[in-house]
Image 1 (cartoon, rainbow, N blue to C red):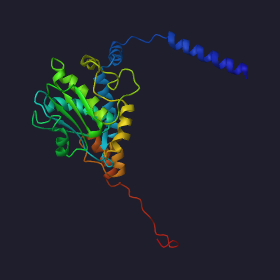
Image 2 (tube, rainbow, N blue to C red; image 1 turned 90 degrees about the vertical axis):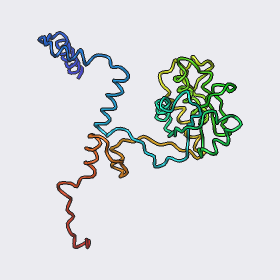
Image 3 (cartoon, rainbow, N blue to C red; image 1 turned 180 degrees about the horizontal axis):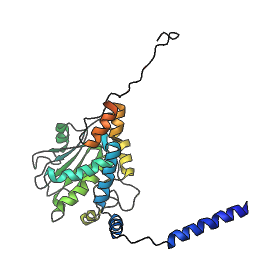
Image 4 (cartoon, one colour; image 1 turned 180 degrees about the vertical axis):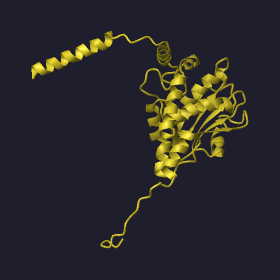
Length: 273
């Protein structure tokens, strides 16, 4: 037995050595292609490639809102940073925390500490983050017991104001959502004491630990998250939305088109059917 194993090992090593030393004929076209394929992808290219692969295979990721409940709103009550500039940051927070955040506008200067409780009531939100411009307030003020947080854009004035407010938006959502901190060293939910620290983060995404804490906390306030599911699965379960691209259309057809050869059930006299 030892002799057999030793012989197999020697044969494998020799084959590998031959393959390593073999020199294939030069092919400039192939070499060029390989070189291109081995180029390091940018994060955007990698993300696009993964999304396309998911789209082709399963129709992409969609939101399953069947168990979602409650209302979590972001109310913009200032006019220096428009809703269009906040939308991208809001999408990051939503996608990572799995809570739907409704972005609404209010009259600038209409929300103050004296009126904020009334503003929350008027908004009909269960939980809300207000964005204001105020000379007296700090950059981030959270009142979990009142179900609101306030972001004051004033301390973040300057070249990076919008970016910093976008990062602070993630922190406000997490704080008022019950996730006061997390166990990761370099995190938006870590110790942030200077506005400049917010510049070090590449996005406003929250990590899974923070999202998990929010799900537990917000459930007690009547707010529940959506879940992520493939388009193929929504077709299988019977609640898929109309397809929006050729890949989803192909998957839709798999589940909704009549089969070319329907199954025939023959009558069984013994069973009476």
